[in-house]
Image: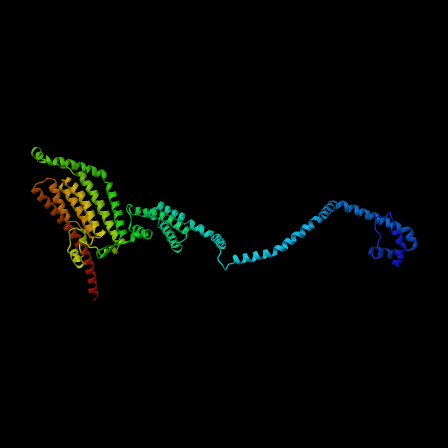
Length: 492
């Protein structure tokens, strides 16, 4: 029905006043509307349909106006872009052709890149990248390694501030130093490790000087001395070089220890300088009175009777000397027990006092004196004795009072006995000292005999006192043994 109706209305579609083209019979909207018209009565077509079409046209016009108002900018932009398509599409086609032509080149370049930078072959760029990545992963470790010299300096500064009791700080510093040395051995080719090790060596030189200075401290104890020597063995192993002396071997640390302690002894004795100046004044007074002593005896009946200041000086000197020398040698033997095995008292160049020392020396093998040099421990007591006797030779003649001189000689004998327990007894040299003092004072032969007799009396008193002490000690031991024996007999 729709086709005849379309043919009936077709002449009216070609109106010249209508700007639109004529609809076709196959149009879905046209077919639908024609089918709807066939269902309407004739009265509706004449009265209601024109109004319905007018309303639909008006609503459509409003919708078109609203759409044009909302999409004005988009429509204009679309129109502009559409107008540029005539130029853009040829350019796009041309660039697409170029890309198509360059794809084989890109493929060749990709294959070449893959073959060049593969992990199976060596490449400088990849090596630099690997090193950079490795450094990035180990940045914290590198930072810790770079901080090692600063940590070592802080530990050494802390130990210096705390003094000789800073065992923990010294141990920490030595542990850090051992760790750095181990790194240097493992990575000796690394410039960073070489730089860290060089900085550490300069810091450890300061620690070595600090430890050597601590050996020169006043009143150093055995435990502190052993710790310091142990630290020096770790810090400066070159001091552990063994010096062969005949049948014995001695470390250079032993020489260093004796030199440091000798320096401390000399500095301690230098504190007696005010008393020594007063004793020097008495020496000058005595030397002026020696030439005029005979005339003074004839006219006034008296000669030089001074020496109080010299006595005070020598007493203090001998007291300090006895304590410090015994401490030095006993501490040396405790710290370096191996170096004392081959040394004998014959190397001290001092007279023997007991036959036990002579017999023990005869049992030990002797070496050629022209080829074997004495050990440090063998010559050190002799050097100490010469230091003491230099002062005694200079100031003992100033003491004219017999009681004071005997007191000084007794003090010297106690000092000799103290060193004698360590193999450095010089008591027999005191007799030579008395004779030299008498000769320097310008006395006659009778005075020399009196001086020798005084020395003999002092030796007798000293030996009697020593014998009493020995008998007392042995008596106590024997008494205890006797009591034990008696108790055992009573029980049996």
